[in-house]
Structures are given as structure tokens and as C-alpha cells.
Length: 174
View 1 (tube, rainbow, N blue to C red):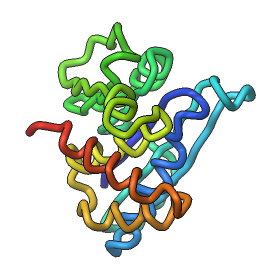
View 2 (cartoon, rainbow, N blue to C red):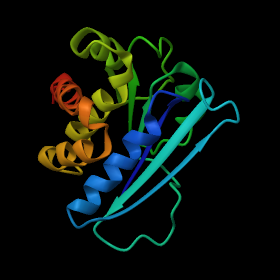
View 3 (spheres, one colour):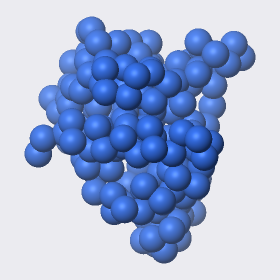
View 4 (spheres, one colour):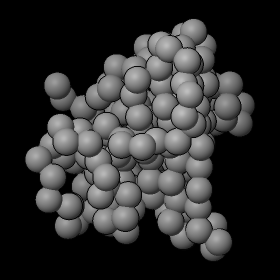
């Protein structure tokens, strides 16, 4: 079972990314649960989405100890990485998390910068992040996540979302 937390601020699309990841897992015949929470201010406030993916039935729908936390802002890194599993992975946006928490396994990717430089808008940062998460976790196949993204985003943006997914996937060197 994999427990993943995606976090940032409202408007960054972490909830959409989590929904897409869960949908991709279901497409592959896996069990998936997705939950979300955000501050009352919605845009700009703290935002968190969690996904549990398993080959077995999932009996508890909440992430208890995440193995991976994505943090797209400093506030999200500070608030949502505290209970990260020992041996887990913290993935941060290089430019938006200048003071990463003291954690041994951090993957730093300039997610928002890549979205702006390669796709033209920070709006695609969540899909860049999703591409990176797919490469890091190997929880779903890249072809499956492409199909899930194409089904979830507005039709006029599919090509740029596919580019964003590839940019994020390629940004991770293993």
C-alpha cells in the first residue's frame, strides 16, 4: 500500500493532481482512495490532497503515515511533512520551498519554473509535479497517467498537459 500526500496552496491544482493519480490507479485495476482538505480561504490557503493506492482492499480512507509528500510551497512543506514516514521521500518545488525541512530523502525539482519555462504557464505546475511523482513512485504506468490526464483536463489543454507531464517525468533522474 502506498500513502501519498500532495500539498501546496489553493489554486495550485494539488487536488486535481491527486484525483488524476487515483483515477490512473483504478484504470490499472488497483484500489485507490483520494481525500482532500483546504483552508477556508480556498485560493492561496493551505491545500492538501491524499491518495492511497493498493493491490488489496483499503479499509481506512485516510493517510496515516505518508511515504511520499509533495510540497509546492514553504508553508505546505512546514505543515504537511511532519509525519512523513522514516525512509520516506519529500518532493519539493526548488524555488517555492527555499528552507526545506530537515529530512534525509529530499528530491528537489524546479516544478513551477519548469511549467513556466517549458509550457508557458505556472498553471501546469500540478501536472509537471504529477509526471515527476509517477517516475519517482512507479505506482502507475506513464501511459495510464497520460490517459487519466487527457480525460480530466479541458480538451483544449490536452497537448500542453501532455507536455507538462513529460517535462515532470523527465525532470526526475534516478
